[in-house]
Length: 292
Ligand code: GUN
Image 1: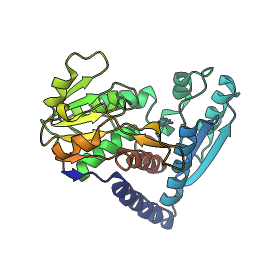
Image 2: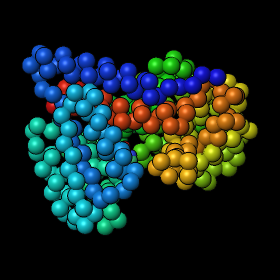
Image 3: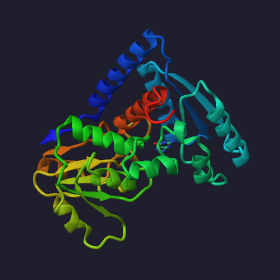
């Protein structure tokens, strides 16, 4: 069994990005600039955004954090999005989700200029991804592809089972794993209504678990020699931790790991790669790699 070290891989990629930024700036080019909008005080969102700002520093990017109370109206937030759309210094920006209930996330996502949508959530980027055109690919699926590639894990023609059908992970992951230029795999998407989900999993060469149910994938669901990617990061109470919680994956690691060829741990697997791929998308935005 080999552990897929997302933390080390992410650190290496950030160093690669920092080196490229250094060369761009030395050649007189523009330092990439990421802006983030954070609404309210959700604990998870605060942590993610703080880590995104720190990652920008590590990569040599300029970053701007815009904070608003959760009393901000939808119209005011849409105005802030429009300001960033027009700000020529900002190469890319994100609006951290979730948003307060009185604001439509879809409306906000669609208000973002798709050429600055480094989260890859705008329907234009989602659509372009689905038909294999250059675009921003959302960070978690992109990070998983990068881990599979850097660990030389064969996906072409293999059977890949994806657990979960969210817009952020399950759906784009399925699209990417299916496409010839990315995963080139045979893909099955399972969800809460799937019949005989265990049997589907047992036939998989690669399982990507993204359902947000701690310890859902057990040893009896995994065939010997499979690769298991765990996207789960549920906060569960843990009195031994300073924060009072720990992150628990969707995979029962202790019993599944011994059966695997490769497995990602939680934490330190997919998580660190997600922010790292946001940095990669921001670098692409700075270079106008996909759009003018
Ligand atoms: N909330 C959870 N994941 C993400 C993400 O990748 N981007 C944004 N903007 N919000 C999130």
